[in-house]
Length: 251
Ligand code: 13P
Image (cartoon, rainbow, N blue to C red; front, side, top):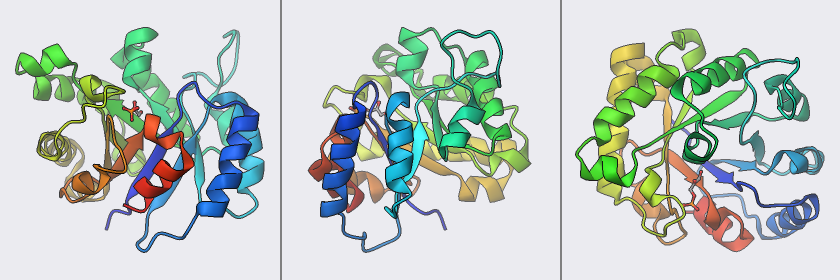
């Protein structure tokens, strides 16, 4: 019912040259996965155009971006609008990543405005949330997740919510090599699906894809994908190498 989704978040890695080299090697190593899986690459803004040209040559991979403005145009020096990204062929947009929240001061309110702007362009938001280490140790995990859900996407109308992808990324697991256990992730994912059921109805809860992110590797991907409410992964470091990313895609 929910096609698995594997998303590469390259963060601030990947020049145009490196992106094209990755694609060349990716094409060479690519074997169609044995079961259906959707694959998305999210390089930096500067590599999107070259990637979109290369992808038009028939690789079964979609493209996403890592951030955008909540406005369509105007006096916003340095910002990129969702419609510019749509024009380049972005199907997905990572929003509310913990690095944007903690390093660039993005609030739940800002993220919710970005989600609305992206949905207006018929781009699929990958809405990220997750607790910090101290929040987990203080027993506040589910409370934090609930706040991020209700303030970030609580206002999205059901008709638009169909497009939503949610990514649970515990902050303490990002880039640390210390992933959540599949059980910890499943507990959070189940809670998120339950929230969607209560707020948006059981039909949408059944179709909404919820990804896990945080030190996903070729070694641990299968253990996450076995869990009932884990529908894919948002992969950072391990998506930068063709071999490890392909092993993750072919979990
Ligand atoms: P790592 O896979 O490097 O832990 O990064 C996770 C992440 O932040 C993906 O968005």
